[in-house]
Image (tube, rainbow, N blue to C red):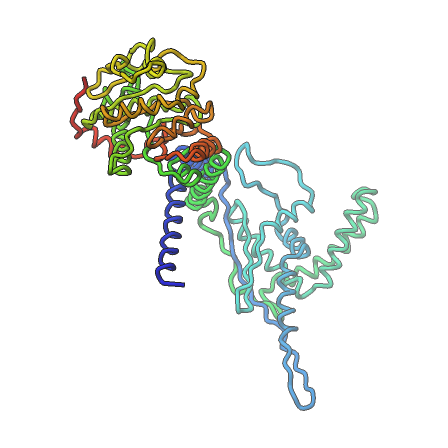
Length: 538
């Protein structure tokens, strides 16, 4: 493979990546309000959660467990040291620290325990708990963390009261020490507690059976009490006692807000992309380029001016400093640079379906060419629903259809003045019963040739491609066609089908115009509107 081929491939991949990134950015900008609202909603929820969340404190104690010496085995004068038994012992002690047996001992050491909810005020749950439920809740608020590469274990207790957090963690350490020294007694005590709970289902507290079990527990407690005074036994040493924390570790408002920011941003972008994937309409310039493989000659915003006393089809003539008018100057430039030899004099303006703005594009494009000192004529070739004449308050009694019915091609009696310098109009005329045959006739070709001798540009406003065959037939008479798509309305499949129909008759499509698109470059156009001199109109 040649270096030129590799470089070309890399450039193509870079271009595809750039287009994809631009398309993604365009979609994000389009849905920026949705994304911003998602972020604000998540931040508000994070603040609310942080406000109603009760402050939680944690206290940490550290103990060291001195494991058993490694087992040494001698086989045929070879000595083997087994460290697995030592590691198993250490892991077993971690599990003991997490057990219900230790939780039971710590519960008794504390003299009881009351579960707490994370939310304060009316959000807090309130109910009666059994002892088992209390012990389970206590266990959930304990963390056992071995310190890596050491024999030290951290024990962390969490509670809404800082003093209680310290008491819990110290009680846990003391209970573990007792359990390590007197595990058989502890196991027996746990069994007795279970027996009492089972018997209380059938007999009352003062029953001799219950009293006997209580007495045995009291004896065991007396034996255990002495052990609780010790800080160490044979293999457990307390490195750090749990201290009363000075400030809560939860809620962490800043962390909650940062997490909410990311969730809101990614969630908003995800929703925006989901909506884009569900929406099969042409939305962006990138849609035209990727789905139709056509250049987007211009994106035209909706003309907005509250005090305008004219149709926005005439905006380029009446308000030439507007961003709307500037987009048509950009369209004019695109056409000129794609046609340096001026061979494309006859330009067909059509759309996939109705109400997509093709007539508005035709009028404003013709106006812009006229403002550029070109002699332009507009032809209303929509012989089914003509509206072009209404934009100029012109008569449609006689026009294109009547001209085509004549023997000669003297078009001058059918010319309407538009009130715009260099721009003339031929309206539809009498609506025929056979528009397709009329537009495809030899006389239509002769008329366009005659008009080409007298005008620099001929702009044809035709019916939508998918509504009738007229536009497809007429595209064979024009030098080039421009497809108009309405942003958010034109279905992608409709746009693709309309382009295929025109290509099927070997007509030339110059490109597409995305009409009523969201404007994204306001600052530039505000500057332009301030600087641009008013162009002359009649």
